[in-house]
Length: 123
Image 1 (spheres, rainbow, N blue to C red):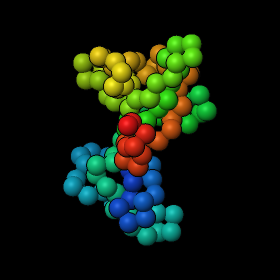
Image 2: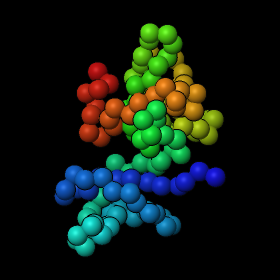
Image 3: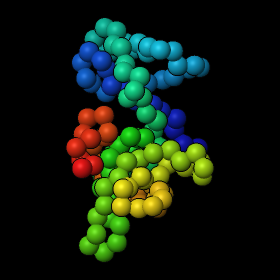
Image 4: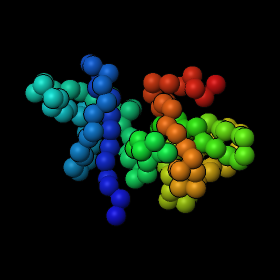
């Protein structure tokens, strides 16, 4: 069974926090930081863990930008997205007509950023 985890970015500090979400998400999520101060999380940055890790052992979340080995000598860059049609986490790459399965490329993928902090990586 895969681990259900979320992360979100603090509005104040810009740090990323692991979130435990019980029930409905309200308009604001407040968490206690390591320093017992409350942190407000940017709702637009909340993303779910895919249950997979990249080739370096880093957890892969929705919204992460990955560099993956497509075929011999060819690397591509795409965004990790949830695919409602197939109920899976996939890679959305502008070079392809359809999504590519994240599971197919996880062992040759590397998280290089995320769409919240590094959108320029997609240009």
